[in-house]
Image (cartoon, rainbow, N blue to C red):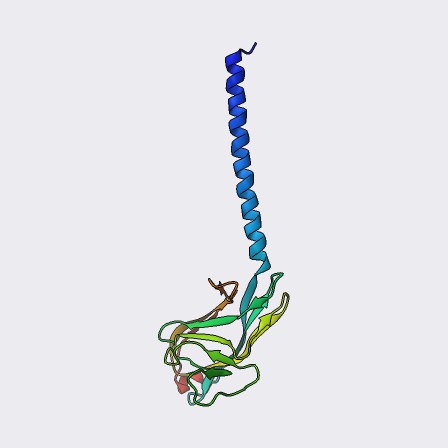
Length: 192
């Protein structure tokens, strides 16, 4: 038989557990709400690319690539911009439809991107579309057909990483993949 004191202790423990459960439920609801907000503004980014390798010393190797951003969320993505980041001391000549904001005569080039950072920086390229772009849910934006060139005799290890940003996602999202290379430069007589 339970005494009055035992019943009071059990009632107190039950009330304490109920309070803890309410606190946990409140935290779970907050997390669910936060995840719903994150899901409304969600994007992924990735590289597609192809290699063109030459077996002649006087020729260059080349990668032709595209960096894609896809809106996976339920809300539009505004002011998309990207950072293409190269490893230190990379040998690449990087080119694409990139306009310099320091150009004396502004140009209109279809599908061009504006460089946002210092053109002297060869490790990071911060780019945004030249025209105002909104990526609707399910749509994709691409920085198309950029080129990476390097001399065939060079030996190096290098990576190219991508990061996508927007007004809604200002902390950035890393690309799903990267471009990685390890080369050993060959002399022409070794290539035969």
